[in-house]
Image (cartoon, rainbow over all chains, first blue to last red; front, side, top):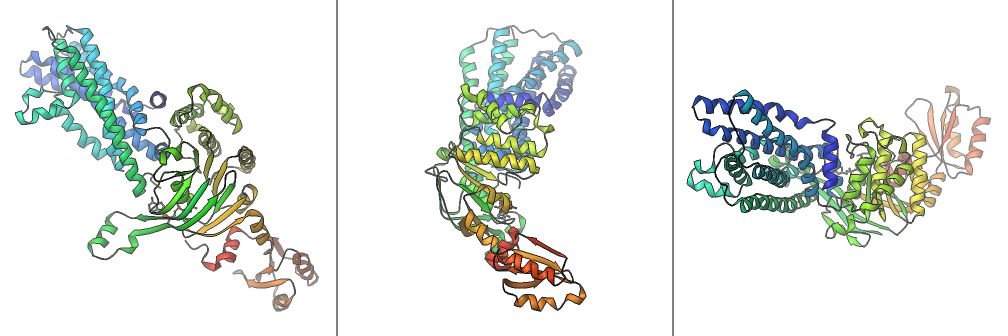
Amino acid sequence: MAAAAKVQWNTSIRAPEHMAIVITAPIMSVIFLSIVRYNDRDDLVANAVIGTGLFGIWFVAVDVAGGVIQNERWMSTLDLVLAAPRAFGLVVCGRILPVMLIGAFTLLESWLVATVGFGAHLSVRHPGIALAALLVTLFATACTATMLATFFVISRDTTIYQNALSYPFYILGGVVFPLSALPDWIQPAGRVVFLSWSADLLRDSLSGDEVQDVLPRLGAIAGLGALALLLGIYLIRKAAERARRTGTVSLA
Amino acid sequence: MIEVTGLGRVFTKRGRKAKRAQQGGSAAPGSRIVALEGVNLSVPEGETHGILGPNGAGKTTLVKILSTMLLPTSGRARVAGHDVATEADRVRRRIGIVFGGDHGLYTRITARQNLAFWATMYRVDAGVVKRRSQELLERVGLTDRADEPVEGFSRGMRQRLHLARGLIGDPAVLFLDEPTMGMDPLATRDFRDLVHELKAEGRTILITTHDMAEAEALCDRVSLIDHGTVLVTESTATIGRMLSGHDRIDITLREDQAHLLAELAGLSGVERVDKLPEPGTARIHTTSADANPVVLRWLLDAGVDALRTGRPTLEEVYVHLVGNRGLTV
Ligand SMILES: Nc1ncnc2c1ncn2[C@@H]1O[C@H](COP(=O)(O)OP(=O)(O)OP(=O)(O)O)[C@@H](O)[C@H]1O
Ligand SMILES: [Mg+2]
């Protein structure tokens, strides 16, 4: 996994296509924050900032997951990498991890937009918890995106999946508005999406109140992430088996 | 080391055409491509075996099945003692795969970084990765460029890096699919030396090619395949004899020499004379290499000075072995 991370790191510093989000994220922040301002709801500034940040993190992850597979297919390494002894899922996850830093950067950006651009007062009351929540979230994101990469192995057209898989996560993940704002029947589904735990915990770490159950909540994020990674490795294996049967791995 | 019995692979074309055919209720024969059928092959440990065949013969498909990239649709194959379909993981640890062409490498990172990555993929001990990468880079002559990104490499250099990549796991069985594609003559020669070294180390090597000379230079035995079936498996020496037994002489006759054709056909040592498409040209097939000097002398005496001798190309071996359908894909 570390080896794959190195490949991606060295690849990304030479041509970071996934940097696009660095430009779009601030624009999104401006939109969200404008809505907040227009409605005189400065209490929701934190939501907007965290929302754009998580949006960015998730977007980058899915983008890279699809990109990795597409790229491997174009370079005809997908065949070879699937026929190597080590699990391909680890390669995918390893390659997503370093790019997560770009995702984290979008969080910083929307923070800057809020404080500098909109003059909002945002203070992190529990910086330790916020940082821990962020790190665990980055890990879980990479793991979950790995699981989604299964679809990219099966399908030759990854962009469809990239879009179709993104939006449900934004909603179920309580990224922009808290999960409790969703209809009752849909809330349990949101609980199994790690992003909803991340969003809640990050929001709480900004507020002044005592944050309850920090460790279990961090554990929930990490646990859901780890589960996704295991499932991802398993599903990719299955997808690879299928591709071996149908002969649809390479483009040639 | 490689045991193949009754191996077959059928591709089912998907897509609109095939679907329509299915909806039409017909069996849709056009949507099935038989890439391999009833292939039997046995390659003992330490042998270098050549797979020869024209485009679309099924060479790559065979290599893909043996290297666990593709499942067979019928028959069985064992590599290094393990079934490629049911024990793929075990097979993967013992093999190396090299495809021709300049694909299959991470182009934005350096040669050395590529090798380091593939070393982990092949579970090479972290302690030996550095040393082995360096060794392989030296072996394929890439040390000077080892720390440059691969995107700046020429085809031949990529091809050599490919070979190093295939060797990173120290494989007992090596699959080479048209490995000299894109290499210049010098690189090809170095490559052949390298294959000889690998063979001397006791590795079993399966190599596909269109190039008869390459097969002759490298292989202990060769199999000719066409339309997904093995036509013949022979030791290279035997095929070589088969070849020299069917040398040929191409001649161009002036108009006043046209009568010579009939006389030639009756000459001893001449198997037959074929007219070639160019007016006035013909190809003389001799019965054996020994007959060539005799026939050549006769031609010179008769005043024929536009002539060319040559060994049969792969195409002619094909025509000879399977008749004229040989190269129609
Ligand atoms: N994934 C695939 N899907 C459908 N048909 C395929 C697939 N792969 C190969 N084929 C078909 O199988 C046949 C054999 O192809 P293969 O690539 O094995 O030939 P080859 O001997 O390697 O040819 P070449 O010399 O051109 O490399 C061809 O008719 C090809 O079109
Ligand atoms: Mg081929």
